[in-house]
Length: 143
Image 1: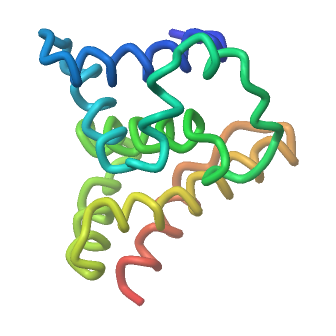
Image 2 (image 1 turned 45 degrees about the horizontal axis):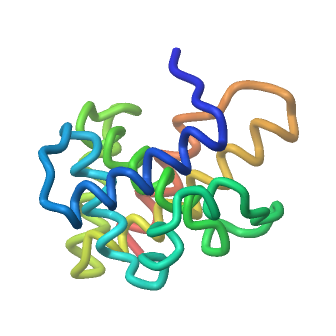
């Protein structure tokens, strides 16, 4: 299993964004990361300085306050949908995106479910409950 350090994650996003802006060839995961960075212009300046971004303390605040946590969640949801894991997540996210009229907005709604699943797992000291996560996304898709 790949377990990058905080600094590696931050540098990955900064480098993917820099490569995108420079028109350099990119791996598929770098392009996906750069696409999500492009959706968040509020962080473009911050990601332009990899050294400063790697050193910054974002605290333990919410997903919206830490660009790297937020962008990592976008990547995670994209990857979950690409392999449909947990089974049914792709359809649930597609339905939510159709209901909201925007994939980006759907991802933000899914982040609430993903964050809750992770918090619940951490609180009980167990593994994440993919079925509860999927049920949360489905509820949001059918509201």
